[in-house]
Length: 336
Length: 260
Picture 1 (cartoon, rainbow over the protein chains, first blue to last red):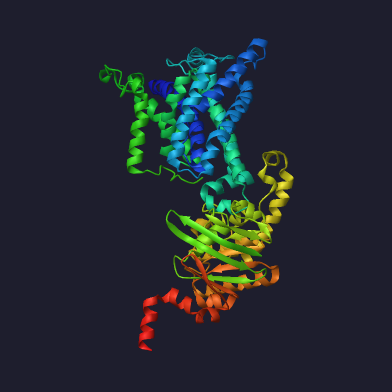
Picture 2 (cartoon, rainbow over the protein chains, first blue to last red):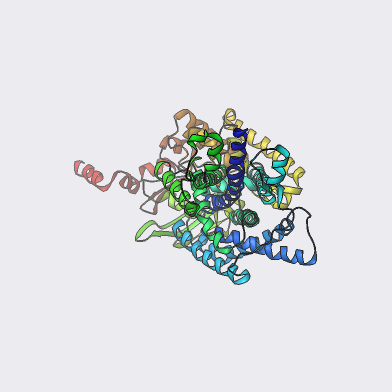
């Protein structure tokens, strides 16, 4: 019984939150990795692209809520998501036309594009704060839990409760669907293959029937969609605050780099590695230890390796270790 | 068919191509030879739209194509291969070939989701064509192999195969023979002659192997220091004083003169 309680506590406080956080990071990192693989630069504006997509979704959600449209137990934001994606696509394509295309035509070095993307980041950052304000925004509605802790306890008779929030379940399911569609698209369709070809060998792709501008546009379309989905899921799960999205940039980049920049599979693996590390290292293990250890060995402290304040430091450390010992990442990045 | 008029390409102070003018006749297999650093590949890159010329003009069948991007030239039927073979390393050889033709209906997002049937028909035709090309090049056993994993010589064949996937009008081959053994080189030579005779491809070949050039090419153009030195049959070129000077250096020639 104690053992079961320990497992339930572990699942409740570590596995489930890390799964949903990992999915969000994976979706974010996929966007970063696609831009890196195909457009060949590290897009620092990705966090704020996510924030923008999420913001449009929130505005549409509020509109829907005010006229009484809803999805029952599911959050209304799901209905608003397509509009958010459209808004984000528009922003990203306009940015590409106004900013990135110029540098592409100049054949600018990736370093220059990285700095350019930083400028874009600050502008998007300002734009989001200007429109929706810098504060926390709530937009989730519908049922809060799939299983609440109390229901679980009464169902199983265990001391420990297991709660699965709707947003968490939704995050994982959406991430699985999105990733499946993305991989099908990249591996099975002509457009996806063109993108992979362009990423693999740009010179050769240019000398085949591949239209580079089209590849660029499709890349941005997909990146905007991924960013919006990731942003909305994160906002539903935690809360929406523009500054948090800026901070997310670090774990997202860490995920993409750990997995291998340019490798979609790596982005997903990296997302989960970063999420599980963050959660396990900052979790107070006392609760689990209490069930597993004999009473005499019961720990006095929280058995927490790092305070949650140091969450971001975990990504940093993993990033450093990977860059030192395997700079290409787990899946040997650089090509799709 | 292709006319190059006084093309210059400068990299900073270095004049890689320095006023080259030449003409390539339709249906010919023209050889382009010259010592290393003569500007052959740079001239190729200028014609193929990879590099913008500093000055000068390139026309194709009377149409000005100076500085057009490579994929536009591709659609006009101008293709090239690379000195160091390029391939899409994570795709199979067959997929590499299937990537080549442009304007496939699978390229629009609409068809990707709603035109599955049309795409499937098109892919089937492409697949058959790719298999045909692989067989022509005697590498059909590699069709499922990832292109990144095949040998250098086989990659060269794949490069040539790429030009057969579309109806090319003119193909620029940049050292197809480099790092390729005799037997394979003969296969490549046979393929070039067949394509030239059966499909009417015009070829421009950069090559250092004089036997290969002699077997395939008429006329031969010799470049040195960014300029065109001489043009004619290989024998004429070999007898040309400027050419000998460019290849062997003035020192040697002077010595010979002293000796004589």
